[in-house]
Length: 158
Image (cartoon, rainbow, N blue to C red):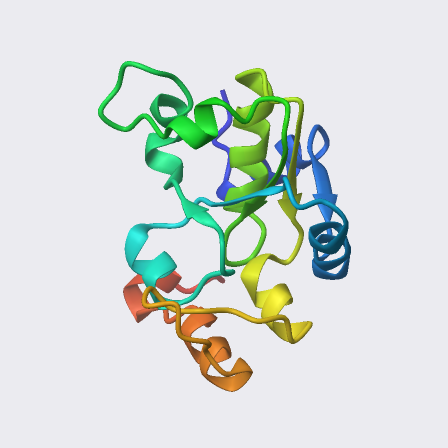
């Protein structure tokens, strides 16, 4: 089997997942008070910046968070199978994979926030930190920008 890249996986699963832009989510949030905002980033990322009212369930524990009987169980998520769920990450890639997983687990209408929190912030929608304090758009942009080391960039391409 040929090795797939992260981008390959995201593209493959995006075909099976609804994606909505930030302005779509903003509209839907005003029309649907029952929408569940599910942020699938790591807790440290969530604490830095997130959409107010969202819950944090990292992708690494998503499957067990969706069922009763596990240490990671998140009851509000277990009981949300019929709710509209906006799945959120930094740039809209991890959220595609998480939304696909939710569909496999029987959730009726999850969708991925296309462009993620970066796009949400670019659309100048409010974000907060772990204390609930509003983060200015410019500061949020800094916090949402990837900072890669040379080792993370990989070897030079010929």
